[in-house]
Each structure stands twice: as structure tokens, then as C-alpha cells.
Length: 360
Image (cartoon, rainbow, N blue to C red):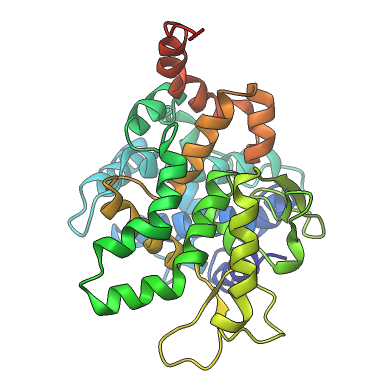
């Protein structure tokens, strides 16, 4: 099981005990189909909703665990409208349209299960009235809109190689006057360049990079074995290929991994960090990788570039040379609908390419 998935599962089990019995039943029903991280998001959304019901006096429950089916059955449409307003206007911070849509969708899933699937001992639905069936949730994630937002915020063409090259050399020149920043750069540049190169040449998610172990790497065959998002078979790792460009970067980093980061033999992680004052290295965290890419991106002149946009950069470049189905498999998407983003991103690139004259 991946490090993140194991952590999410423990967190899920701890918080599930604080939920009503029917939510626990719903989560158990969903376990075979959804990852622990997705189920954990469901729990967080239900915590928010149940807490709001209690604050608004729509339930007399003393805790979330005491919320009843009757509390849900007797909700009016005005209550759901009020909750939506709460999510979008609350003083301590509003939610984006995407977040609100997700939270309402999580409620719809629960209410649908209780009214259409779950039964009591007499074979009647647990929930006799489903108010959430009346709530229309507009689709937010349209591939064309997502593509429009990514325009100009990813690496294109030669920039993929240039960004890795900048991590190796350019950043050091830019921060040479700052002794602390320069020391950190000298210590980590091969590792950092390797991580960027690997994502730009494979399309791995940051969580997949974090969870990589040395044994997952087959350099000669340019192959990695990773736990992919949404795959609930925890005994199976998906083979993912990477391009030739990443091979030399991986070999260079591997030659430094143990000595430079004081990596103990028991540490299986591929990418290691050596915290200040620590006597031995340990697995890099997701946050550390995210902050590292942002640091280089700002100096490189791409302030909008993030670790996830490195994945988008690879995907756009890969799609130009392959079809949507190969791109879907390489990225580990559940459906081609998600992959359609790259079809829209490459529209302009392909329209420009057809106008170029081939040099004789």
C-alpha cells in the first residue's frame, strides 16, 4: 500500500467512528470502488454539512454521530439553498464553484444510496424522501474550459528541456550571492532536476513520485512501477514508461542518493531529503516537492508553473505524438473525458504546425 493511501485509510477509520451509522454503512458500500483519499473527502464534506445542520437548529443532535435519518428526511429545499449560500458566503472563507459542486455531489451520493439502494429489515428504503434529488449540480469541469485556463501556464516545446537545464545550472547563478540558498542548491540540484525530468518525461502525479521506492525503478527498460490513483488493488503496481531524457538524470541522482543524503539501508524511498540537523535522510514529502518546483519556476520566469502543471506539460507534449487512448493510459486517467483537456490544449499548436513550411 502507498504511504499516502495508508495515511488516508487510518485517518478515514478514525473519523468514520464520529459519523452516524448510516454514513458508516455508505462508506463500507463504497470502499471497493473508491480510494481512501476520496472516501476521506466524503467524510469531510459530511462533517461540514452535519455541523451546519446542528448550528442552524435543523437537528437537535448533540454530535454528528447522533444525526438521524429523520433529520435528513424532513429537510426543505430552503435548507439546501441555505447551505449552498453558507458555502459560498461564509465569513471565514468562501469555497470555489468546483468545491461547492463537489460537496453537493457528495451529499447527493449519500442521499441516493439511502433512498435507492440501502434497505431496512422490511426491505423498505432507509430514506423515504430524498431532497437532494431535486438539486441540480452543473458540470464544472469542462475540458475546453480547463484547457483555456492552462494556456500559457505550462511548459511547451523546448521549455521542457530548458527547465531541467535551469535547475542544473541557471538557478545556481541566480542565487549565488545568497549563501544559504546556494548551499541548498548545490546539495539538491541533481535530485531536484531528476524529479522535474522524471515528471516531464513520464507524466507521473506528485503523489506517485513521493511513493516511489528504489525497487520500483527499472532504468534499463525505462520503466517504473507505481500505485495509480483510483486503483484499489493494493497488491498491484502499474508499469509506467519514461522517456530516454530522464534516464541519465536518474542514474546521476542514484549515484549520489546514499552518500549525499546519509540514506540508511532500511530506507526504500527513491527520493530522499536530509532535514537540517538530521543524521540521516528520509523520504521526501509531497509538500517539499511542490514547494521545490514553485521555487525554481518563479526564477525561471514561469510563476504559474506548479508540480501538477509539469504533468500537464508532459501530457500536452505526449498527446501531440500519440492518440487520446495512449495518452489516457500513460497518465492513468479513469476515462478519456479527462484526457480531452489535452486535445483542446494542442488545438493551437497543431493549427500552427500545419502552416509551417518544411525546409528542404
